[in-house]
Each structure stands twice: as C-alpha cells, then as structure tokens.
Length: 134
Image (cartoon, rainbow, N blue to C red; front, side, top):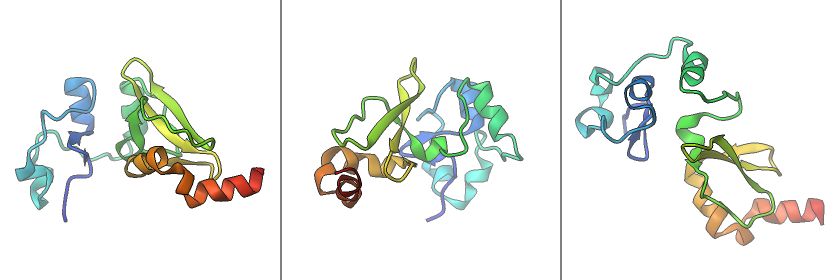
C-alpha cells in the first residue's frame, strides 16, 4: 500500500505540520492524499533534502541517529514491567518519549511497544536477557 512517509498511526508528522500546529496532528490527515500515490500533492508534505536535523532542532527536540520520531515516538505513559525496557523522554512537556531495549541496545518501534507492555514475560528477548544477566 502506498502512503505518505509522514502519515503514521492516524497522525501527520511532516515538518510543515510541526511548523503549523507545533506537534504531530490529525488535522491535516486526509485519506485522499495520505493513503494514495497523491500524497505529494498534500500541502503539508515536504521533501527533506537533508533538513531533518534542522527540523528537529526547530521543534526543540534533540536528535539521535538511533531513533526516528515517526516510528519510535510513543506516549511517556507506555510503561512496561520488563526489566530491559526503558522509556526515555524526548519532550517531557508534551509527554512524548521513545522506548528502549537494553538487551539489544536499540529503540523499539511504536508497533512493538504494546507487546513489550502486555506480553513481556513471553518475549524471547526477555528470556534471552534473563539468561545473560541471570
């Protein structure tokens, strides 16, 4: 399925959206554009052209090469009991964070965070971590 690179989980994460609304927003989301090959026609779409770091500085978020906000950004309320799961604030005022797995030394994509919260005891990564630290 073709979709705009800035469309994720019902929100628009484009630089133009941040400049307009100050945060990701559902307001510019339009399935006629976001979920079709026409996404580049949307007035909130922009090409990055190496401006990603400047954009994140503009919105007041420190950039890390290890995470990409459109796939890693989660609510800071996404807490897991897994001892290897950490929540790292990106912008505490807005309540946005990234989730981090200490075993793999990697950030966790938003789509996997729910599993880390609900099924962490069955997680093979948790079991592997227990063997390493046990």
